Image (tube, rainbow, N blue to C red):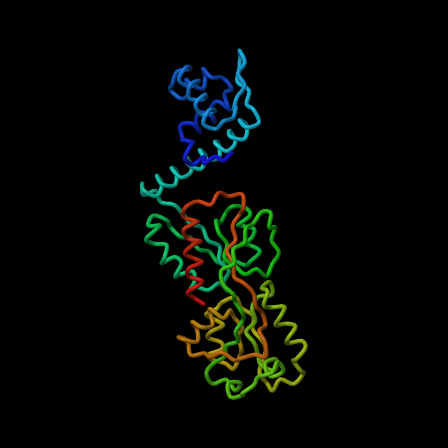
Length: 311
């Protein structure tokens, strides 16, 4: 037997099955549906005839669902719940209800990708206020689990509970080393790790995934003699790091998407290392148990489109 339920079932029939499955009483079901008991009984009989299956066993006092009835009750409840959610979203969007999109963003996430995603979303989400906060990775993850942010934009270089969190890859990221335009290493055709290790560095904070890679590289390749290059500096400020490499012969390793912007506008240039210090995907994280609301779904689609444009 083949059933085409999309053509057979109506919302009115689904409501009948749902309410009757909850009340298990035909008179009470008819009352809640603003109908009469004979009309509800006829509707149920017609539905069972259409489906060619018995949904409820009638007794003198109550209705008992069959196995097929229990299955259809569950599906009816899910369908009706989704329709209620769709109505809620549509009323909110058309009624001009101001909503908030709370974003937790890692500092190394591409501002170009994020800004373009917001720009793409503006026409579709005219009443949504975007709230973007930048925090260390551990803080962002804690805020996501606590429900203080809706989406987290960060790399995948840390362990998450995949039973709680859905991870959507957006774009591949890798590290780039920047220096001022007059840095001596720009003149070398091939730069080695030993060459890089002898320079003074603007270091990222210790809690970032890039820092252990840099510490390992420096400890292996840095010799005692550093030709008076001066001490390293640690900062989480991109503006300070940028000024340091512009005003001093220091090096700075950052995400490639950000480095492209600085190269275009800030009088700095990339130095090609022997290999990437760090490479991996940048992702969007959300809680699995949280319903994906329309604004979040729209914005995530715009994020994916923006990431594709970034290459």
